[in-house]
Image 1 (cartoon, rainbow, N blue to C red):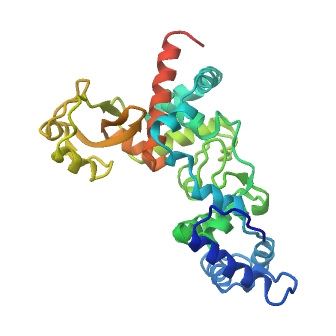
Image 2 (cartoon, helix red, strand yellow; image 1 turned 30 degrees about the horizontal axis):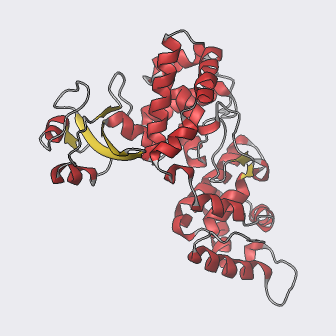
Image 3 (cartoon, rainbow, N blue to C red; image 1 turned 180 degrees about the vertical axis):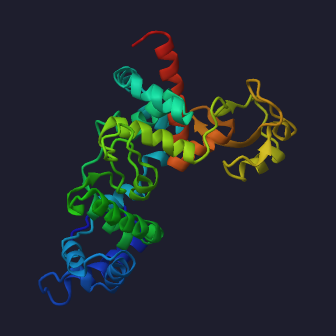
Length: 342
């Protein structure tokens, strides 16, 4: 195992050193099976007990697993952590708009059916695929088993989550009757055109083309599964996503700043937001459940009122920047399609 990056957090470096020792033993001896790591041994035993996996097969798979330094580096520098105006510049682009229009035209019937059945706008589905994988062109080239193994056992901040995802991945591979060592995906173990984590694949993927398989590398099932995902988290048809706040030079009031601290799940109303001294730039009902958030533009902070549907997009990816990018790309796609650009 070779780790060359100097950008990894100190706690990750320390863990990797200890992890390497567990894998390699003492005094330059040949690498021992990963199963000798007590944490991995315990994890495998849980899989045997809870899901009736074959112990010898698990040991073979885990003895071949390797920690991927590039996965840890990517986790340390997520693109969504950049200021909004920088992130937007690389996401809501002319190439993505043109690619989205072509994708929408090519899959128009499937998108229309998914929107009708699940109540999710076609442009939101297209924009999600556009941001995730550039319409299926970039689905990731990482070995998914190694990526999840790395995050489960060499990334302490989120080890619990990724051990669960590794468990779900092995169950998924068994259900799909595929070798878990041969899956390719993102550095975080996301799969297919919509980049579902294994737990989301098992929970939300559907067989939208009725061919007897839930195949997220196929566009029909990907489109239907994204619509199903958003509906499962409470997407409300015909309701707003966000509305900008009218801004003047004065700084927001303390009351408004307090609302910013309550998160994105709707926790107040538009009327209550108005009482903090701000107004929505468009008409929205005063009794609409809402929250507020900020994002960094090149001219400073900008504020929005967010509704349930924006919160639903953040269930796909918790980043405000991500949800804003999906929404803004969707708006651009809808305007361009209505203008006949396709």
